[in-house]
Amino acid sequence: MTAPSAGDARRLAAASLAAGDPTGWFEQLYAASRSGQAEVPWDVPAPSAHLQSLDLPAGDGRRALVVGCGPGRDAEYVAALGYRVTAFDISATAIDLARERHPGTTVDYVVADLLAPPADWRRAFDLVLESNNVQALPTAIRTAAIHTVGTFVAPGGTLIVLAAATVRTDSGGDGPPWPLTRAEIDAFAGDGLQPVSVDNVGAAGTSLPTRWRAVFTRP
Image (cartoon, rainbow, N blue to C red; front, side, top):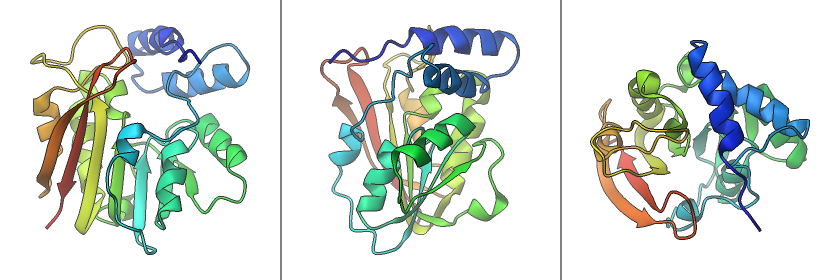
C-alpha cells in the first residue's frame, strides 16, 4: 500500500504560512481530506512503530496526554495500556474523526491549541506523548511549542518525543515536516525535565529515513 503524499499538506501549509497563520492549515487539510479533496500523509491505521517499540509500563489508571492526536491512532494505543488518556488537536475535524473512528473509546478527545493550552494541564500528566507534531510547525513558533510540551509532565512523569531527524544545524528546507535537529530535541529538557535517552533510529522505506526517539522525565 502506497503511503499518502505530503503534497497536499505542503501546499496548504505554504499558503497558510504566507497568510501569517502557521497552524490554520491543519484544519484546512483535515476538512479537505474528509471531502475527498486532499490526503493527510500521517493518517494511517497503525500506531507509531517507534511508540510500540518502547517498553511502556501499564498505565494502571494514570493520566496521559497525547499532543496533536489527529484521528487518534496513538491515543488509542496508549489507552489500551491502561492510561486515562486526554488527546487534543487544534483541528476540530481531526477530533470529530477520532470520535467517529473509535466509538465507545475511553479517550477524552478535545480541541485545544498547543500554544495556548488549558491552564490546568500544567504538570498534570504522568505520561505525555509528542509524536511527529512539533515537526509540522515552522521555526518561528517551534521554540514555544517545545517548551509548552514539557510543562504538561507531572512530577515523576515521562515525556516521549518522536520526530523526524536531521543532521543539519537548522531545521530549514521544504516542509512540513521540518525534521528536528539534535539541539531542538535537547530543548525538550526544559522546565525541569531530564533526558533519559535520546536515540536516532531508522525508518526504512519512508521518505524520512531517520527519526528521533527521546524520553525525558521530571524528577
